[in-house]
Length: 60
Image 1 (tube, rainbow, N blue to C red):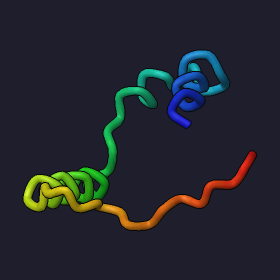
Image 2: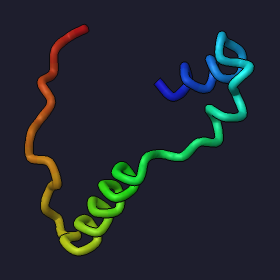
Image 3: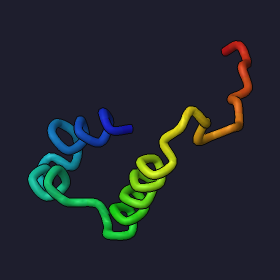
């Protein structure tokens, strides 16, 4: 997704808006969520898994 986003901004149809698209920051709600997760990981840094679910393995 990131590669396609950058490609569209630099080469694709959004080229005229590249400066705006590549320099904008994430919404505050995303930054807050990110920082809360970082804090939780720092506070509860043990050998416990953060996620207990396993991904199903299916042949492609």
